Length: 235
Image (cartoon, rainbow, N blue to C red):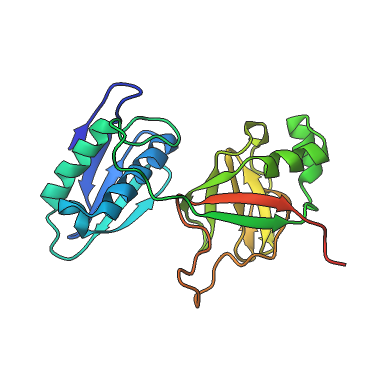
């Protein structure tokens, strides 16, 4: 089942059942995901009608998953989703066309970074910026958590300075240290643990991205804002 709207006033979405208690919403691109996820969170937070059954809104690169309580009326929820999509404007930070359903206030997280990464010079060369300008660009614009993935606690961040769009490394590293801060395409991110990876590394942070004893375990939740702050290395 799908719905479509005119450019700038609505979005096209395909709604698919997931198991016995969920709906998967497929959209055209990441921009639509961000707008739709924000509107869905607002509707779920208000909890009116079938929205009261929504327990989680899980965005990905091209989809948004709605998890629900057992016995939820998925037909009614699907109808509400389609009605919401008809009123959603496509554009970063947009919401329902009538101005209703304001999204919950975004939580901002500051991430201190020592900008000493092994790829800082390469990023500077690729972008035509100096090292200092790369750091200023990375810290000067707040990033938004689009979705999680890859490893527990890893968040794909979007909305940064467009001059920092760079490709992944041609040869991934066999091991990237935990806390490494990198760039890949339009995204920035922080490695929550040591793992292989091909992102361009700008620096490191000692912020703990994933802690199983913390509630919630992930520091960066979809919809949150991240502001990187340049700091000096500890002596």
